Length: 333
Length: 106
Image 1 (cartoon, helix red, strand yellow):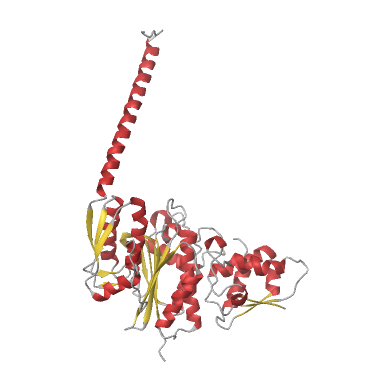
Image 2: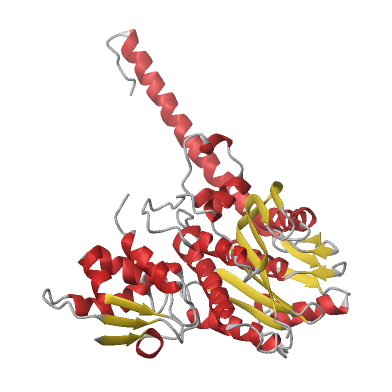
């Protein structure tokens, strides 16, 4: 039945309503069909493996540019929901931080995107040994039974909470490797450093990062040639520069490495606004200044702070989260 | 004088600030071992706390245990009653006393 309108304005309003309704129905149909296509296309990526070639010097603290470029590529493919083929053959030098970051990145994205990971081991025997001993393959391959002899490498540990017993194990490992030469004061301060890092992950790193759970990754390597033990602990949280309190002008102009140094100096950066907090990072710096630890490096977002090489810069690439690494040396009598 | 050894009476691996963050937290230690001794208003007896024998301390553990105690029962009362001893980390007692003194909010 034909509609009757009292005047042209009423007719126009009705016409506009009809058009709007038609447009909404059309958009709804289009939307659902395009989503289905996108979804099918995304899942279609899972069987395609993209090659990612690791750099020869696989170390975030010693070769940040080359190593983070590799990780950028891995993350790019994982976010696009491709499976990745990690080609580690070229690796000839490695530090614990790179293994930890690789594990944490795979752990974070594998479950989220449902992609598959495969790869090859380093050709270099020592690097291959480090990968095997770290327990890396046990973390990325299901049903893998690691052959860990615990000789020079403390296999990777990870947890969501601050666990003193794990920190204690790491300190005991270091002391044993250095022939029980570490004084009790140094052992206590290394324990404190590990706990501060675990605590920062738990307390600050994941605040406001929805869909992610706090998790830290820890590893130690004994170097018999130098008589030292290197430690690395990291998380994939928001990063120190993002979680510290910033002054108004700093929100626009400051660089990440300056914020990290400021937090280390204890310049009232605590997010909680409570004066009695924010003492963890200053304590770590104090431990370095007291010469208990050496080669302290902190990498977070674009900030790169290395007290061993006096490098305080912002990097082009981004490190997702925060990494703290340091070394202790045995006492020779 | 009441004597408390953290290693003997609580844990050799003290944790972080709150129980939610992990086991053997500073809040746990305060609630189990210190608060009961401060709940009686008229008791001003001394308490000796031995800090040795543990793997180490996070700053948050110490701050929450002792700074938190001062926030609850007052700075002066805590400074009057608590005595700290540590041969393994001789500067630790003065650090804890600073935590107690600096509990007032900015």
